[in-house]
Image (cartoon, rainbow, N blue to C red; front, side):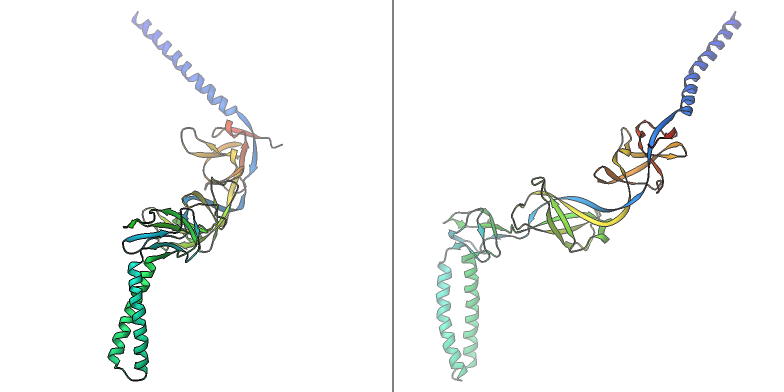
Length: 340
């Protein structure tokens, strides 16, 4: 009786094993006879101009805080926020009491120095007297010039008043009275990976675009290239000068700087030929290898309209890249090329 039970259990185990193996065998057989129709294109390299966009914030090319070097009462501010000013234009007048008093003393001393100079030249006065008077004259002249600069505050360059922090009659006590910015020219700083250092030169032209003005492209020039590489980020900084004669762009705007690097030979393929592995960022393409699909991992480069640059050491010119039907393929499946 026990022997019969053992035989029955053995038979059931064999049947279960056969049932488990049959689907796998059938699936393997299906894969061996499966043939997918595809279309291919010969992989070629073409010369492209590599362009990379860098995000940045625009800055005024020049800006200055308008303020005297000493505290004092503000007599009159001649401009408001938004006022366009020219170089050397009078912007602010401070209290003139000290300046006028010193100016009177200087004018009197100037008359004395002129008289003493005449006597000295005729030999009627001692060298020491002349030297002392001249020293006093030069010292007071410098003092008057300094007081004049700090009493009558003028624009060091043409620009626009961006901020005003006081009103007439208030006491200046540290915070700048005005902020003057140059709107005719802007600048921007970008950090470029160190691998591009040999390709970046001062004087190179760049393109500037803004989300505010989507239909316009502005021109800039690389003005300064940092001579050192940041050891932390492995990037180097570049300063770009941007002509803004029309005043369209504004300091503080977000912008993109497009830099064209040297032309290179690159593998450029139809964008839809590149597939993405589900659940990861891995990209790959299929090529036809003697009637069998081979999956090749690639890295994506710059996109050019409906095409994209791909990078892979496994691909070479002349490979048959699958451009239609690639979504149905698995690595190793047989393929039939129907390029019609």
